[in-house]
Image (cartoon, rainbow, N blue to C red; front, side, top):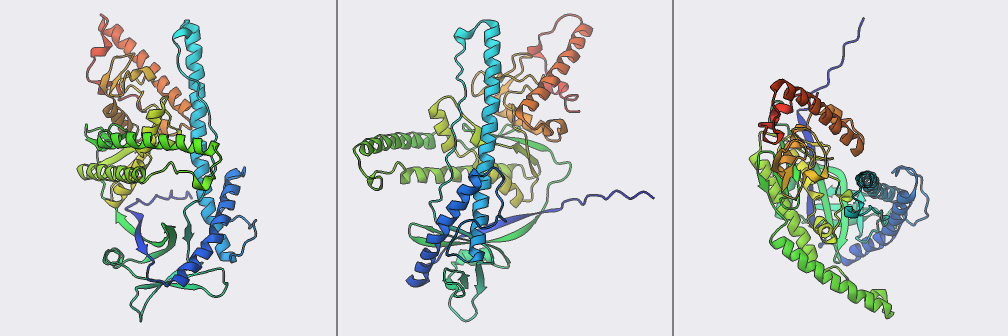
Length: 475
């Protein structure tokens, strides 16, 4: 008797985790806050030791790692330290591995372009720089943060006090936990009304003040229909978001770009002054810092503008399925230092995270697809070449002459990659390029037959519309 194939249950809801931030611990007496300072003075160096250990190890970080270093912390706090360090190291190793893989692919692309230039005898005009790899610095923990669970930090409801909660924290004094009062503001109470807090609790100290972050899980029903239209979303600096429906949201240009230029010049002057003073033997503690409040304010402002752009996009496409690129900003590089500086200041890595969060919050379906060569691929003939982008705004295929606005074309390409199983199965960008070039060769053979059947030659650059050539490309 054949076993019935188990049907996969359709996903009707998705769970999101909401954080309640900026709960200031000001009601506690100085002695209790001093006990927290003593705890973090032991906790943070131990977390740094394990973070360095996990980053340098050959194997992947293991949050169940056996204890290695001696400490005055309890066994439970020691375990929490290892778990926090494993999370930091895992993120570092993933980003570094992605960046190194992108570097290797750039080296292969450079070698191929150089060999082509040598074969064609145009090395005198070949000015492309060979990619270089700069080893990443290990993460350094500067901000005191304790990412705790119920084993070491418990939030207890207050029954006979003016406070809302009591925070019970395990300290260096084993068996004598610290009880810190928690007073919620009105907006904290509204956010937590009718909610059940989860086991995650975060304590961090900034500018001499201790802050508490709580979180709770929320189930949001999916509202996107199975036959909903797909909308591709391209991420960029000129416009934070550009959709396949020909809409653009947000921009780093203008006031933010001018402010970033001013802050960059200010940091460069400070760096020169710091280098001069360092040569004169000035102690490191007395050297001027290269960071400034204006640059931190700009960073917050950029993220706020990104959030506004994402919210506007979600509002305009409530009934659509969002398709955006699996962006890896850590591996992105420009030839000019100024462009790299703009890249980092624009916080492009924040956009996919915020887009996924905003879509999940509204019950919308949002999916990532491979971003490799999405800006260089021709949607008509699938030819891939950097020269297809003569400038930042324009896309024009060298083979068939297809032309369009570059960001809009990239968004349409991303939308078309949704459901492309062959492309999703590619493990590297080289495999993606090989697949696209295979489709390009198939396109050429197909249209050579069309030209022969039609008789006289046709100028490919005037063929319209391009959608007629996309039907057989994603089998």
